Image (tube, rainbow over all chains, first blue to last red; front, side, top):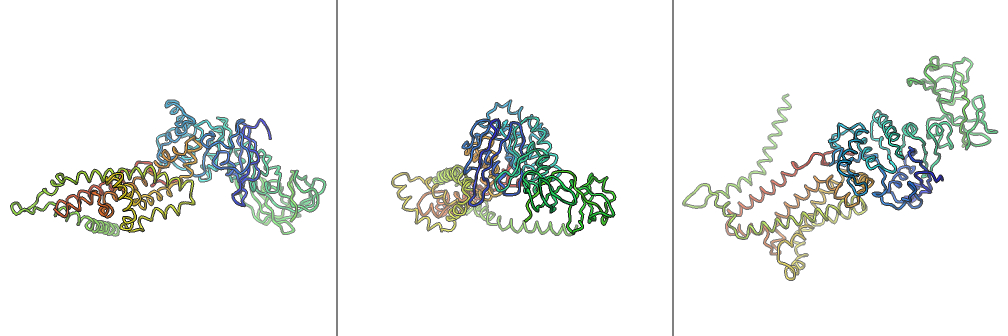
Length: 349
Length: 264
C-alpha cells in the first residue's frame, strides 16, 4: 500500500447474505490518475465505486482520500462527483440549473456570478454551450450524460466517479464521449475511478485497468500490460480474445504448434497445460504442406480474422493485417506458427 | 381518406355522447335554479343565485370547508408526500403494508369510520373545540387512498433513487433531496393527489353530518330542506368550482415536469 496514493481503498468487504460483493478489495489511485475497474456483472465493481461515493455502507475496510479517512463520512460531505449509468439529471431544472445545483448547496457554496461563470465554463467544456437553457427532456441521451459530467465536475470533486456512464448510449456516441471524458479528465487533472464492463472502453481511456472477480481485484496494470501480460487465466480470458491450445510446459516454456514460447509469471510450471493465445500472436502463411486449413475468413477493415482448422480437428482464431491475408481464402492450406510472445498457461482440466 | 373521416365522426360522436351524459344533469340544475316559481313573474330569475350570498350559515360553512381543505393540503405536503417518498426510497420493504394501510379508508364504509371516531370527536368537542375544522384529522385519513395512489404512480414513473443519490453526492442533505429534488420532480402527481383530496373534502357529507358539524355540504343539504332552488344553485356552483380545479391540473404542468418525460 503506497502512502503517496491519493485514494486508498484498504481491504473493503461487503456481503449481501452469502453473496460477496466486495471481498477484501484493496486499491490505490494516484492523484490525477484514471483507473478503470473492469469485470463481469456482479463482480463488485459498482459496489466499490458506490462505497467510495458514500452511497454503500461497508462491512469492513477503510477508505482514505487525500490523506483523510472518509470511511464513515456521509455522501453529501465527501465531495465526490458522480456520473450514473441511468440518466440522472434533475428533470425540473435546465442544463445550467443542474450544473449549478451543487454550487448552491452549503458544501460547495459559490456566489451567484461565479456560479454562473463556472456553469458556462463547464457546459462549454462538454460542448453544450448552446443548450444551457434546455430541460433534460429536450436533450439526447449523450447530451444528458455530458451535462451530468459537467454537473459532477462543477463542484471540483476530489474524485470523479463514473458508473458505466456510457452503457445506455449507442455505439458511435459512446466512442465519442469516452474520448471526451478522457480529454476533460486530462485537462482538469481530476482523479477518476471509472467502472465499466466494456473492456474496449476501459483499455482505451484508463491509465490503469483493474480486473475484478468475485469482489476481489484479480490484476491491476496499464492497459497494454494487462492485455499482453495477463497475471491470471481469468484476466487472460476476460480481456480480449484467446485461443486455448494444449501443450507441454517445462522450464518456463511451452511446446505448442511445433514451436516453443516462454510462459508468463503465474502460469503452471510443468506438465500438460492450456496456453491462452491471442489471435494476433498467431502467424498464418499459405503453404501447401501446411498443418492447417482456413475454415472461414472475415474481413474487418485493417485486419482480417481467420477461423482455422488444425490437422487434429481443433479450431483456432487468428487475426492478421488484411494485406497479409489476401491468399488466405476459405479452404486454403496454411502453415500456423506462434509469434515469439510469452503466453499465459493454465492447468489442463 | 374515407377511413379518417369515419374515425373523426366516431370520435366526435363519442365525445358528444359522453359530454351529454355529463352535462345534462348540470344543465338541468341550471334550468331548475334559474326557474322562477313566482306566479307574478313567471319565466327566468336569478333569485336563487342571489340568495346564496344571503344565507347566513353558508359563507361561514364555505370558509370552514376551505380552511379544512387547506389543512388537509398541508398534511399531504408535509406528512404524506415525504412519508411516501421515504418509503419508496429507504424502506421498500414497507411499500406493500403502507399501500394496504392507505387503501383501508376505501374498504371501510364511511358509517363504520364514523362510529369508530365518534367518541373521539365527542371528546374533542367537549374538551377542545367545536370547530368543524377539526374534521381535517379524519379527512386526512379519508383522502389517503386517492392521494397515495397518485403519489405512488408518480414515484414509480421516475428513477428517484438515482436522482436522490446524484443530489446526495453533490452535497444535498436528505430533507433537501426530498423537498428540493424529489417533490418538484413528482409535482404533477402531488398536484393531482391534492386536488382530488380537495374535491373530496369539499364534497364530504356523511361523516360531517352524522357528527353534527356544519360543513359546506351539510349546510347545502339544510338549505335544500327549506329552499330547493337555492340548494341546487349552491350545488351547481360548488360543482363548477371543483370541476374548474380539476381542469386546471393538466394545464398547470410546467415544461420539464417529469411524468410525461421518459428518463428511464
